[in-house]
Length: 313
Image (cartoon, rainbow, N blue to C red; front, top):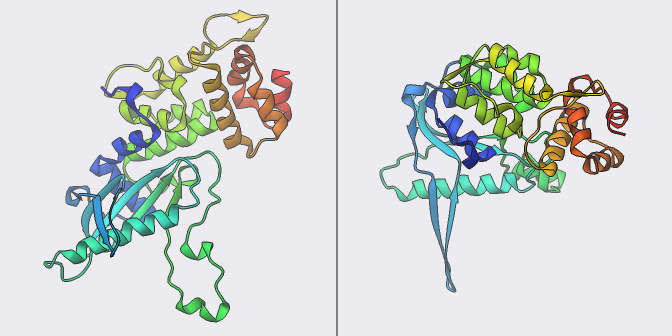
């Protein structure tokens, strides 16, 4: 059984993709449209604590970088390095950072005299922020290059996968697909969608809840290695409606700090409605827990910011 209080979205992502089956089937869906090119039994964990000594006449600097998960595998007879990196915020330096990772790894490989050729590297950035990615994806996105010189310019790109936009039909492993779909449904606030994940691995459900900030969903989680989602989600949904009715208004049982509740609701609303106005955000920030509870149990019916404001004014 995993200890949820020690998990962050980044560590939950690492824990999930440390499973070779999940890593392989997710990578196949991302890189090969679901075709089974990468095989779980042929993945080898690769030491990714990369150290590079930069030596000049004045100083020696030891620079260390670590990627989340790196594996070595053969693809059509060529050994490649594949990695999956979790990203929960928009990082405008992402392309530079991963270009640095990869160049340091190539320099490391060059030092090994046994290497006749270098192993190519491919990093999938697993992006889980509710907002749509608006940062650079290639080195050229940072540059103004004269038209005449573009054909000579080197470029670098990242493979960014927005979890909210993944076509899960390309994921051929059931539990890997359930994990991605659970994240998508949690961001939508869709309990009915979660019901359809019939038998989901319990730890994976917890990882999905931590990644999305849906901590209420794991408060009364049934025991066992797998969750019967029809039974489990009924219990969890009931938790939001529990502990009485007051003047016909459902009051959800919510634990945790007011600020955490406000942040969770803002994240869910941005996912559902897009960018929110200052008025809506400020109203939620200034609302009491009782009003936020009222908004929580009505989240599925909200279609606009006016609906939000009517509920909590």
